[in-house]
Amino acid sequence: MKTAVVDNKSVKIINRDIPKVNQNDVLVKMKTCGICGSDLEKVFGKYGMKSTRIGHEPAGEIIEIGENVKDFNTKDRVFIHHHVPCYSCHYCYNEDFTMCGKYQTSNIEPSGLSEYILVPEWNVLRGGLVKLPDNINFNQAALIEPIACCIRSLNKLDMKKADKVAIFGAGPTGLIHMILAKYYGASQIILVDINNFRLNFAKNIDPTITTINMTNNDNNNLDSLVFSKVGNIGVDISIIATSNLDALVQSLKITRRGGIISLFGVPSKDSDFKIDFNLIYSKELKIVPSYATSEKEIHQTITLLKNNIIDFEPLITHKFPLDNSFDALKYAHKAKDAMKIIITSSG
Ligand SMILES: [Zn+2]
Ligand SMILES: [Zn+2]
Image 1 (cartoon, rainbow, N blue to C red):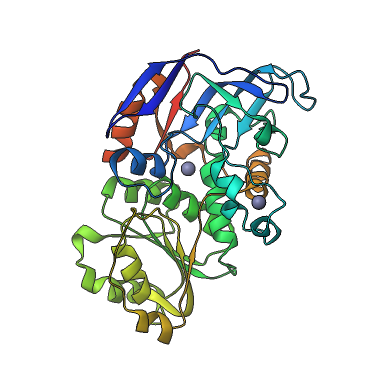
Image 2: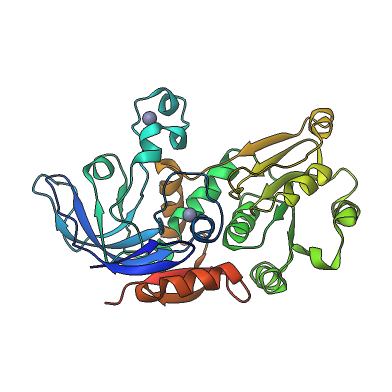
């Protein structure tokens, strides 16, 4: 079977054996798998986590089950979560599921960008394999993981109705945050990026948002620009949906006193950045990182999709076959005219 592997700032497709299915494992034929910003970091940047596998947003159809598997059958359409916590450690008891040691080391075999994906016993027995409701198609299913990540980030912010929100980064997760923030009741949303295609794309989805292109504005006047839109208090919430840490510096200025900043985009490993801690202290700013997602938000996402509450599918602008995974990643990296890119299986 074919699988994509990272190879020195490139991605190649290699042939390998289909993984063996043990008693409690499930083998899934990949149908779709989203390309994530963290995949781009793994290929083109410096990623902090140990894994160099790419593709962790897969969905597909079960083609083989282990002899002891009871809850699934062949032909079931499923979403696969690659990381699954133990639910019985100190982190899990404190609901810091993504900090669980087992969460961070559990994985699917070999990766989401593969013809076939082995979902190991650990994941199968702990909610890491979820049957898709009939009305969620495989395109939408490839969006479940990133939507769930954004729901987790927003759940941590204690967002109130009528909050004013600034989002830095108009990529797929910036736009998912935008759509969700509106649904959660945000009264005003400011979206900041340097990419006109993406800002216009966002504006088409939600004409009520305010977009700011930073290439037309120097960093020094973003605050006055934002204040002119939302008032001198500033925004209640800033979401950093980019790995560019300049955005964090800007967010310290435009977030109101006592406000909250979500550190959602993946900063490069060893990021070393000068920020004014006095500003954080004197304004009582709360910086809340949000890494990945867990079962709870995955089920919240599936509920949103199943009930047709929000349609995220328009975010998908391009589909590439598995064989062209590297082209897909390069395209997503350039981001010239792309929003969400997904990989599809050949058959
Ligand atoms: Zn992701
Ligand atoms: Zn745990």
